[in-house]
Structures are given as C-alpha cells and as structure tokens.
Image 1: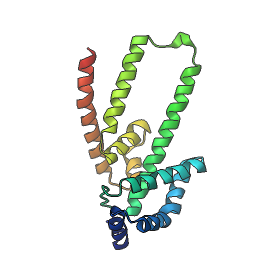
Image 2: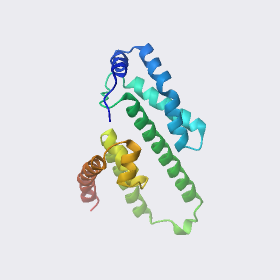
Image 3: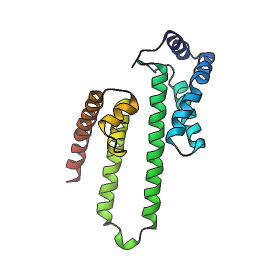
Image 4: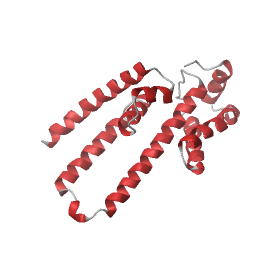
Length: 186
C-alpha cells in the first residue's frame, strides 16, 4: 500500500478543516471508480449507488477524525468493499429471517434455548462492533462470508500475515468478551 499522494494529502488536510471544495474534488475524482467496485459485487445498481453515497457521507461526517495512512483511493475502495459486504450480510440475514417465518411451528426450538441463542448473538454482534474497523472487516469476511486468508488479502490489498494477525486479535477479543457472557448464563 502506498501513502497518500501530495494532492491527496492536500485534499485530506483541507477536508479535515471542513473545506467543501476539497470534498467535491475527492468525490468527482473517485465516484466512478467506487461505483464500479460496488456494482461489480452487487447485482443492483441502486444498491451500488447507495453504498458509494454512504461511504462519501461517512467520509464527510468523520472528516476531522479520519487518519488515512494508505492512499485515499485504497482507503475509499476498502470502505466501499466493507459497505458492500455489510449490505450483502444484511440481505442474507433478511432472507434467513423470511425463511424462518415460513418454517412450520413444529420445528421451532425450545423458547429458553431460543432466548439464550438470541442473547449470545446479540453479545457477539456487540463484541464484533467494538473491534477496530479493519479488524472487524477482516473478521466478517472470514467468519461470516467464509473467505480464505488469501482471498481476504487479495480483496483488501494487504498481506496474508496482516489478515492472520487481525483475525488473531479479533478472536482473542471475542473469547475474552464471550467468556464472561457464558459464565453469566451458567
């Protein structure tokens, strides 16, 4: 990964100060590329457009606190990929929910077990949400999307060792957090 170019550094400096012209320049420079990235992964152009708009809205909202170490282009592309995977995950969960609603009542799980499972899922979601952004993205790509370390490294343009380190960090955090949850249940 390369560091931000001189012009990107200048845009980021101005953006952090709330310069709307710099934001507009960034938007015009990268919008088509980011839309292409999103559209290649989604089957719906409206969804792709919304993902890109969400990334730019987040960039503006967090402009004063963002610290980009790699190129702005790489950062925005990774943010789009994260939003795409989040959207795909959300749609997947909606489909599962719809299937559950159509399942016959005779195969429902015991109410107490269902409650414990729901509580565990909530705790897991909260714990994952607390992870640093890159760590969370790598965890979700690995555990929820089933991508291999190599696929994640290629998708995010990072080293496989970085993927392994981030997953180790995420799993250690999850183990620590969920250990207290399990002791609470029993």
